[in-house]
Length: 271
Image: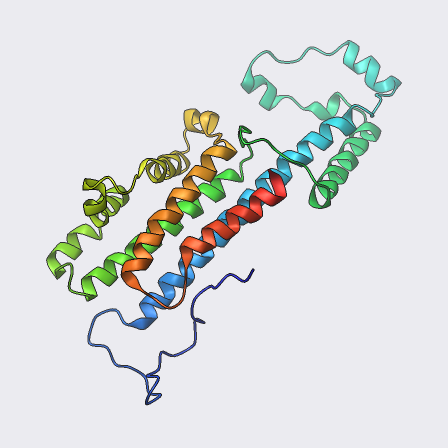
């Protein structure tokens, strides 16, 4: 399935009749829409690249654990381990030189096992459950880029509303710089009043992104989204974008379908 990524970045916008460049009087012309579309495509693609890398890393860790079981310490290792007293605190462990514990020969075997595990994770198949919590650091890249993706599309839609004269310039200047959830609520206020859409999963996306932006010790510890949690976020994002696409009626850049495409591709590989 081909994913449409929008108009090429250097392709001029032409009048289909006369073939000449269109001079638009507005501050933002067709190139602004092109850049926003291409930026959104970039963020979405990067989001799922990071997610794929995250699960490859976690699969490699599982394989690495199995390979470590096959590595037998030599006599030199055993003598050192018998006398070993490990630090009792996290800081002590961070300052502890583990190279003094294991022989150079055994360390090489461990490095080789990790390299082997990473190569196998690239090609072998493994299925994680829907309740699997993703603990790999690369999940930061997925969450951040998904947030950037949604925010870019929302910004583009606000520009569309302004240039369609559905939002006056003064209101646009205020709304476009407000918090992202306030922008989304404003756009979908009619649908929310009629209970036709929900924003709980989208709100969760930006709640997770806030934890990545403020990567405190507590946030670093608890940021482990489940696979099922991410799928719910993607599905709701896709439904919201469908609503925007109906209003915009743009020819290219069907982002609601792109999310589903990446989601299904991910699930086929890992779920």
